[in-house]
Image 1: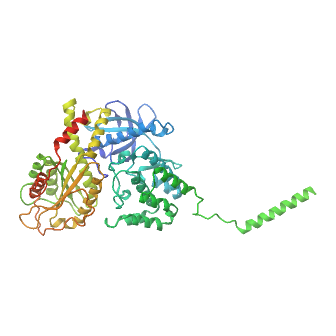
Image 2: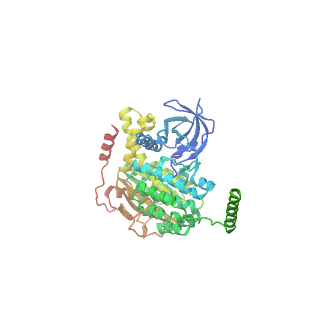
Image 3: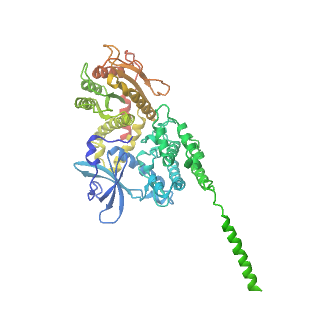
Length: 317
Length: 246
């Protein structure tokens, strides 16, 4: 459900201009808005600089106090869970602070988080080549495995919510759709939604994220086919359409076994999904046969070997 | 928690004012939400004004939506209304306990605890929704989309931890005296159902007001004939809220 918030909040939905100084009502921290980074279902995210320092952060302003606080609660819970596991240092500093900001006679709730550089999955793959899905996909599954282990389900998994850095490291952004395992999925986007494909309910479980992940892969490799399948009458839409795309699209061929399992939800858990993906991508690629050595090169090698033997013979003689 | 979700594409033209009957519904503890559905052109100045007014009087919210976004809009409106109803109850409690008027007035760390409770309630509170569908002549081509959106809404409601039931009415009926027709009694699952709207009218009248009255009766007595089927009680919920917030 994308559109959120009441009409009263539209005045700042349009955006707060760069250069605005955001001062927290409760804690008094000050942040200078540099530019708009993006928009989620619960609010708009800005790149900000902490006043008086050179630290960059991402600051999310919510449309609605309840929705934003609910998202913050999830982040807090994730942070608490992350603590015992000191190796996972990146998750510790995710949430920086929470406060309110008065703007145009309104109180806008906001929170500040670590700023992650990267680009959305689709852009990343377009720039680096689709074979990078191997790595990005693996890292994404790794992130999901951590989340699922803590009893959470990401929910609104889509290419825009996956931020990839230069070498394929993955960061999930927009935790607005994260739901507790067993509850209803808070936010979803139709293409990646299990209910949309008549493939199951909207109860948050790990399989819900696997399904979305699989559709994300299909989207990345066969967008037009997915688009056509999604346009069908709702009653006839089914996972059979997705399976058909997987089997027809050559670029999805090497992933097909994994994707089918994800769509039918038949992994034991996300670790297994992760391991299966890992095994799949580390197989010697059958995609491109190894280039055969051309005949002339063999001849040249034989000649040079012969010359070498001659040279040695002449020297030692 | 009780809600009416009215889906219409124009102005009422028969019987009591729907704004008045929506206000009656609100007094009965039923929130009235309205979705104005448009595909080509606009819904008209008068129509959109009425939609806003009905929702205001019914304590709910109104949205204008095309058939494409209908499913999304219905779910958003439903969820938001649940949250709002809980928010109102929580705010009442807050006022009593702390003298603060709303969740927004709390400092962020306190707010976090309250919202956690509200999240819990949003997910678990039993929910009864009557979908009241305008099936007058102009709505006919949109009914397939409406039905699809209802099924999609059911998928989402079915995922909640709390019990969620839906009943479906359309209006007007086939003949003059019939303001609204019950298509589907309380159900938690629509998947077995083949088609929602069978007895469709040939009339062009739009008796929105009387139709709302009929739905209020349905909420009150469980059926339109007046046979009681005990609905769950409000006091229970209020008590639960009290427990949580303290």
